[in-house]
Length: 139
Image 1 (spheres, rainbow, N blue to C red):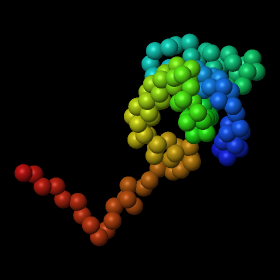
Image 2 (image 1 turned 60 degrees about the vertical axis):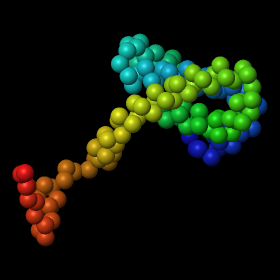
Image 3 (image 1 turned 135 degrees about the vertical axis):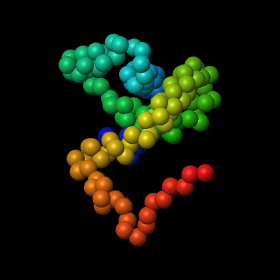
């Protein structure tokens, strides 16, 4: 999904349409959060069933990107609507949980991109410089 195209499309939604889209995206964010954290065991089944039936299932990244686009385009309007507070509060909690889970998974980004690129393992002999030595001092 093109980021600029989705931002442009979301920008032209009315406040009520943006609120409905946020409710829909909130449900997907909760579903993906349950998939990332231990607990709900039916989540993978729901995702697999939805794809097998032919229902479009947005990816985790698409859900988070669209939530960001909707909030970027309509946050000022939505924050003034009393009905939007029922959606924005729980959405904030879910996003905070996503950030906590993502922060814990951040150290894995290097090895994961290395594996996805099908890169070879580094040569241990080549990783040390001949100009420096490693010395351990015990105090």
